[in-house]
Every structure is written in C-alpha cells, then in structure tokens.
Length: 580
Image (cartoon, rainbow, N blue to C red; front, side):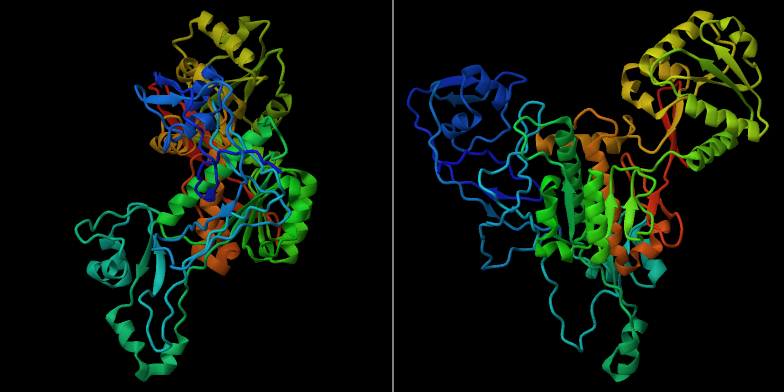
C-alpha cells in the first residue's frame, strides 16, 4: 500500500528519517525569491507541492533567502511514492558527549500513534500522523557515567546550582576550595573566563583537601559513612491533545503543539546545563494504549492531560506507580484532593486567592481612593467587584460607586491628595475604550488617576498601550509575559528560529507555559531527587510567563500553584511586575 509522503522537520526531541524518491528535472522553471516569500507561498503560486520543489532542489531546506534562485517543477508533476520507513534516532538532554559506537536505529512498530511535529506551513502548525499505526517514542538515551572502581573517590562532592549574582570566587569561598579546583572538575568552564557562569548552571563541587584525606582507604569506616547526593536523570512524558486525527488543526491542537515545543526549548537549555533524562510525547486521544506501554511505569513525571476524564486516568496511574503528575490547564478545585503526587499549575480564583491579592494591593497603596464604575457591557465582573468591595468593607476602607450613564458626580468622587483607582464593572475592550474616552473628555490632569482591572486586559494591551500608560493600568494575574523584557524577546526569537513561526496568539502563550513548566519541574527534580516534594515550597525557577510556587492544601492533598503578580503599566513606558 502506498503511503503519504510526509515532510518532517527535525525537532529537538525527535529525529525521524524518511526515504523519499527525487523528482525528475523535466519541465522545470526558475524562480527568484522575493522578500516575505516562503516555500509554501511559492508552492501555492505555481500549483505544486513543497516536496516537489525540494525534490528538484537538492539540499533545499525550509529557510530560503531573498534573491535566491530555485527550480520550479512543472505543474502537475507528482512526487513518486515510495515505502515510508520511520526510524527513531536517539537524542539526549544530557551534556554533549560523543555518540556511542555501535548504536543501531530500530523502526518502532507498536499500535499507538504519537505526534510527529512537522515544519509549520504559513501560520498553521501541522501535526501529521503516519498512515499506519506506529508508536513513535521520542526517547532520549542518557550517556551513562563512567563506572568507578569501588576504591576510587568521585571527583564531585555534590552538584551545585548557581544562584543569581554568584561568581566562581563566591562559590569557592562558600565550599572552601579554590577557583582552579572547581575549574579542574568542570571541563565546560574555561580558565580564561573564570567569571562566565550563569544562574541555574550546575557545577561539580570538589572535595577540600581535608575531606579527601578523611576519605582515603585508611579511614574506610568514615569513607563508607559519607553520603553523596548525586543528581538523578529525570525521565518524563507529555500527554496532551495534539489532534493527530485532524486534517485541519483546531485551535486546541495548535496551542498544544506550541505547549510541547516550548517544553523542548526548555529541554535544549537544560541539556546545556547538564540536566539529563528521557522525553516521551503522546497524543491524549490514545491515552489508554499509552498507559499500557512498559516505559510509562518508569518515568518520574507526567505532564498532562486536558480532558477531565483523562486527568482522572492519569491520577490513578501515577498514584499506583509513584509518579509525579503535573496538570497544566485544569483549575478544578478538587483536582488535588487526597492525591499527594498531583501538582496543579492553573489555580482556581477563590475567596482566599482574591483576598490575598487585595490585601497585598491595599498594603502597596495605603492611601488609595477607590471608585467603582458600573458600565453596561458584556463580560460583567460583578462577582470580582463584589469581592473587592467586601474586602474593603472588612478593612474599613471607603469607596464610591458611580454609574457610567451619569458621570456628573465622578469628579466630585476624585481626591487630589490620594491615588485614585477607577475600577470598571466589565473587562471587555469596548468597556475599557468607552471609559477611557469619557475620562479623556473630562480633562482630569490635576488628579492622580489609575485604572485597576483585570487579567483579561492582556488580550488587548498591545492595541491600547498609550491608554495603559496614561492611566497607569494595573491588574493582578497568575500569568503575564512582559513585552519589554529581554528574556521574552529572546524566547520569541528562539521559537521563531526553531519552528519557523510565532506562537499562536493566545493568552497565556502556550509555548511559554510549556517552557516554564518543564524548566521548574524537570530542572528542580534533577537537582532535588527524592527530596523534591519535601522541598517544593522552597523551590523557584526563572519564569517567562507563569511563575511557580506550590503549597499544600492539607497534609493529605497534592500541591497547588499559588503564585500571583501585579502588573502595572507606567507613564514612562516601562512595565512593573511584582510577585505576591
């Protein structure tokens, strides 16, 4: 049976090899690439496929340059079909080391379909399933550490994670060793660049001379009592709805592909930092067959799923097999009940969360004047405003109510000696624009005026940035990516360069969500090992969009991420982000 020829691009976790037959050069024409063109747009212009163009241009990849001349096959030319062989080549997230000799590549022929992520076309990312049922396991084979003789002392006393602003000198002083001794057991460090270390980098810390003397064979009993905490590779799986059965990808499938690709960018960084492990990715649609695979019982962490029934299946499976489960999207309040191994990233906004945010805001602005504007719009936030009013009442803080249809009393409510915070009753862009227009008309330059609102405002902040700056718009949220931040720009550029497109325009950005989740859990589990759960309330990581801080609901429950932050747009164009 002839199979469809899939154009597969090498992605960080996977490397698939496809056997394709080249096209004949008969009937070719020439095309000079102009600015903004892609292989896909050129293929549509000439009525041929991308694969057909590449077949008559040996070595032509997805990236083309303005002015480049490429061959165009005649319209109607078909790419000859051939038997498709899928070979999975191992790729690791360990420190770069030479490949082992004698490694073989074996086609996988089981019955569960997992995502093959292809190079996206135009703005639509594509996940293409192979035509025959195949389990594609993007496994990463770790390079085993050199075995050491029983009487040898390992070079590392411990593995240390570099903290912000630390230098080799400060670390050497902390552990009582010299800088040269640290460099000697860390080949990646260059002697002429002794200060070139960064936050999150893992360093081997050697023994002091006194410790080495105590560990010599003459002191066998003491040597046997020395406990060395070695990092443990973190094998993990991602199970999300990648939409393999869809010919045209849904919004859900597109955002879930972004989510996975963000994870793989984090994996690439962790590999450079010395974190090791294996990665598996599967379509949630096949969850029952996936959980029957033998390797699933060996992973330390599963990230997924989206459907509530599938989350229940994962909860049972992970609890029975002592595996940590990270649920990235669901905010169900009962998700972590009576299940200590579950970590809920997306928290439910309840009274406790609101009051914590309101209390922090009131502490930051003790001399504030609050004015609630009742504006008749969709997405009414009366529940939110009622909670805020209830909090203000409990703290005996005065506030005013004003109807948008009658703003004649609004000026009388403003204070010249206090910060005025205006809170609309709706979070829509229409309500925001109407309120800003009305306030502009009143010409209130003598008052210190601020708009206090909603996380929903993120969806149109870039279109209303001048108003956001003018009125110091402030809101609290569990996710936010700062467009002014250099790390945000760097991530967006890496994503674009790696996958040939931008993230889907959604809030939150799912690529960043995947990156932050993998960076927090995989990196910290690698360092903490079996102590991860016990220490989690003290663990942090640098986040692009979704900060993480997990706490217990009670002693028999799982963990909930309660990280929150205030975002404020300042009149000078800067954006302040303050974590609670």
